[in-house]
Length: 250
Image 1 (tube, helix red, strand yellow):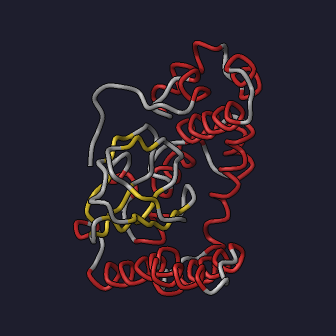
Image 2 (tube, one colour):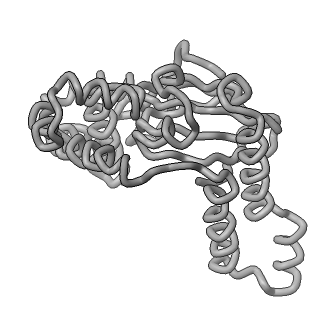
């Protein structure tokens, strides 16, 4: 959860997460992502958001994640006014904590420009966001989503996960759609692409990343990256240049 300046359209990679975002003084919902999206830039102000791990946003916000999958939409279309107001107030607090140029300038002039102190101030503000939102999350009821994420990261087959959770495969799919907004196979694909992305950014060659992340071969990795990341493995290794072409803008 961090503010980022936006001055132009940018590619948002798929990570399976969902976010509430404050951009250009408007509260938005970035739904669970299973493919890359093209988002327009802001008006020069900072953008800040709260990220929900895969499987958590629907329960936290009281929305059907399937309706929001791979979409960036105004929060007013899905969230009640009281929750929107709390969300805006909480995210504005984060902007104040992280981007108060007057305070930062004064700190530098006075010699009190300790980066660790500024990071601590931001972390303290970030911890207040869920409390400000007053999210009604029953974490115990969502324990299975954590297990699903761990199983998907290991590449575990759906039938094995279903048996361990005590579900049929049909029940697992239904619960995945209700909580995540997409199925277990999509979660595996997203997490595999994320693992390969991190390997490449850490210096692995695309061929090595493909092998370590569990792809059939490098062309398979390239196809998945074009869908999930918005850049080819070679582009990512060279600096993460987004793909040219049409995208879904918001």
